[in-house]
Image 1 (cartoon, one colour):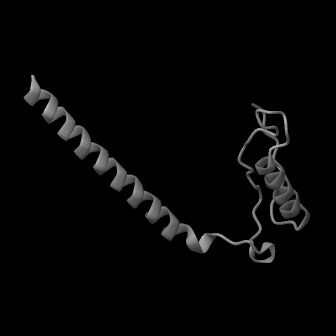
Image 2 (cartoon, rainbow, N blue to C red; image 1 turned 90 degrees about the horizontal axis):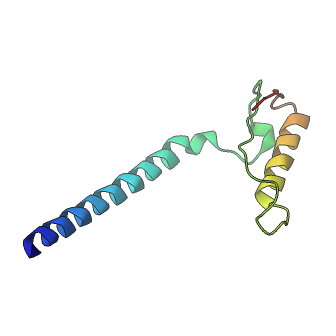
Length: 92
């Protein structure tokens, strides 16, 4: 019984370490491969027919405004006014 538990613990630890390094490597790869696609200067942003704003709740769980939602909407509005992205109608 003790040997079985020891093996299970060892394999769980090895698996956890492998998953950790896989996620770390994936994160590093994504950061490095997309670094040249990020900009904070609107003038350098190319024009796209449609801009996608990823969703978030407009309010926090305590009822206060969600700053992430506010900043995303402000960024979308700025991109639209600078004609860097168009509008699309979505039905859910």
